[in-house]
Length: 125
Image (cartoon, rainbow, N blue to C red):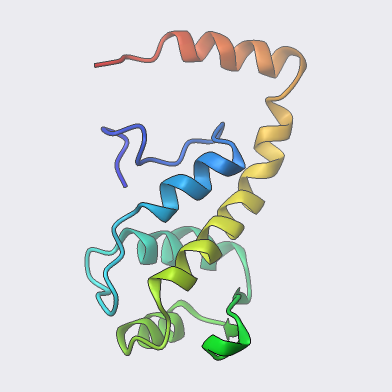
């Protein structure tokens, strides 16, 4: 995920749908832990904020998985005990939880006006 491609970067003002869409299409090969942006987000953003991560899965796919450390998640992912199709919605859920107070703050009043003004300064290519 990269800010050079705005459709692949997560921004503080992204809607829930934007975050879900961007994460869903992100590069995340099964079993590969190196150069995996989804795992990078989990390691550097999600695990420092949350004590326990729950990956929701259907009972047919083994039920929910709980991780207390990034290392445990990485090991499970490398062994393909965690599938990208389960990890991506998990990341989206936690990112959206982190972003919700920011979205709320910038949804009205002066912050909303300021955000609109800042967006006018964005360079487009």
